Amino acid sequence: MKSLEKRISALQESMAAEGINAYYVTDPFNLRYISGFTGTSGTALITSNHAYFITDFRYREQAKAQCIGYEVIIAGGSAAHTSPLRFVQSVVTEENIVQLGYEEEFMTVAKFDELEDIVSAKLIPASGMIEALRQIKDEEEIAIIQRACEIADAAFDHILGYIKVGMSEIQVANELDFFMRSQGASGVSFETIVASGYRSAMPHGVASEKLIEDGDIVTMDYGCYYKGYVSDITRTIAVGEPSAKMKEIYDIVYQANQLVNEQARAGITGEEMDKIARDFIASQGYGDDFGHSLGHSIGLDIHEGPNASMHNKQILRPNTVITNEPGIYIEGIGGVRIEDDMILTNDGNIVLTHAPRHLIVV
Image (cartoon, rainbow, N blue to C red; front, side, top):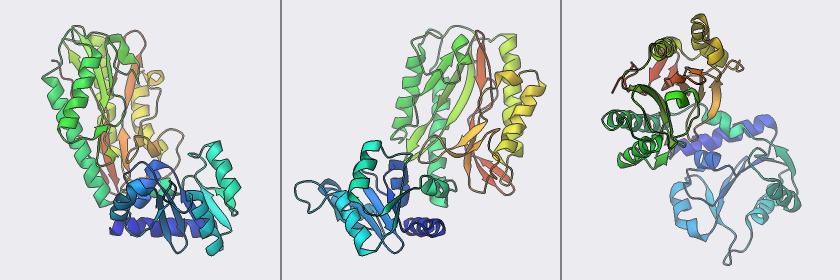
């Protein structure tokens, strides 16, 4: 797989720029990105000239099939000659590695102590190197994310014919989850949020036993995993006729979402993308009720960098996949959020989620 070889080469270039002789990969998302491995037990060691994938006997055949460009090392367990870290040390000795980068944001203190005890190279905290590569999606990744978004869109269409007064939020969440699996999803991106009535004022109000009442606004934030990549969509509907206040809030959030869909592009900063929606909502008198960032990138993980945030002055590059999710939340009354996933391009963006955004009353 050429993409894996390109990823290894890109990491080796980053290592050279940082003066790191080797990089020890332990974070599961980074490991899948850099090696293609989908199992649950493995690490990778990338040096300036070699790539080693270290696993145990259970994954011998899987690793050889998936980890193209790697020498697969079977370590640990009763049949192995050495432990994973003893193997790392052998490479440190053979290749005269002076500085070994490791992922300090993922590694536990206990694992670090073990690494420090066995490996003689200087350990350099180097989290973020692979995450930086993951920010820009290739064609294969985009195609997979597109399919994950199609499944999420289909789930919204399905739930419109299912949801009704008297159902619990958990019932609705379970139906969304089961439907997405029926369409080929391997799981959900995160615990599905279904927040109705006053609970819709909770941005992360995961589904509860609350029953949906006539006139309730219902916010549904959900997504799925498909071939290792996620989708993330939010739609807000009304079950029965909503109040005039909630209609007003809905219209403002809808307009903010549309402004971002029209204006977001590569070349602006995360702060500038956030500002498109934030300034409009503030101009309508609800600035204090939009208390989270506009969006975040998605990929192998549900929250990846870069963000569309008032604190992010980083330029957003082409082929960044990022969410657009403005919201207004009024305690004790309710809230509205509308979220899309998009690919940023030099000319604008391509919106990947197509479920209807206008207010639907069921």
